[in-house]
Length: 335
Ligand SMILES: C[S@@+](CC[C@H](N)C(=O)[O-])C[C@H]1O[C@@H](n2cnc3c(N)ncnc32)[C@H](O)[C@@H]1O
Image (tube, rainbow, N blue to C red):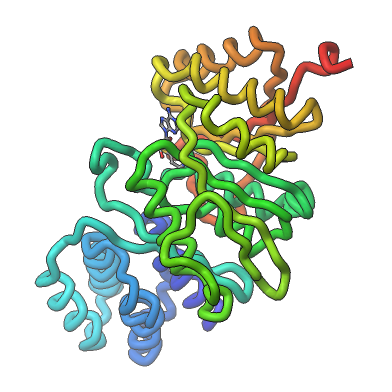
């Protein structure tokens, strides 16, 4: 039964939609297992220190109670009612946390509870970033000893954390254009470093830092890179000379397509034709996405959809249409 509870714990801590969490009904008949389940989820140390959204925790506890009632189980552990009463009294905060447990490592991110805060969508974790993280974990070799740059990273820094903790890149640079987003990237990265790894670091990470992770030095940086002002970041990109370019959920506003394409072209120009760009995108409107992909083709890029099945981050492919693409310079023009 432990692996069943472990699966529920992993899903709960990473904020997977409640109806996607499978609760084994046999387990609920056992009073001690009910208690163990609460200890591993709502009372988990990670959730106590860095709590998930209160609304989410309440939904989870109500879901459990509903299951127990459906099964007509009369012996319901006090901890379930107790926690529900406590959570119902807790105020919803502006920020909450999610925890991703992978093998023996974990990543915690802080995100905004609203889709848009302080005029940016970048303080929230978007499903396309989960898909890209999953893709990275399934393709670690593509990132080994590579220099990686992410565009429009958003404030959670999840992609950077997955690369730094789970892969062996030599350089990881995250970028965005909003000050609060850049500050949040720094906070999220620092929150995930062990004390020894934080030694000699400033309180706020910025353009260029050397991180010693698992006894290996990695170059890390946070760039203030606005797509419409790519010229201002050219010297940094030149130093970084990326092998891999990444972006998650940046294709939604038609008015920024032209500067975004110009930015991608400049990065390819600096990095050279071997650069590979992986784009993860929630397709909200196929017309909007086609407009972007046509622009890429007009600018001599080849865009190929990558077949991908989520394995680690519990993305529900049926409810959101997330696709991952590989973008390269058109071979005919490279030769
Ligand atoms: C929908 S969010 C995605 C954030 C993150 N990649 C994720 O998937 O969770 C879009 C991100 O693109 C950034 N962005 C939007 N316009 C930008 C621009 N012109 N230059 C640089 N970044 C931009 C925003 O600040 C925001 O962080």
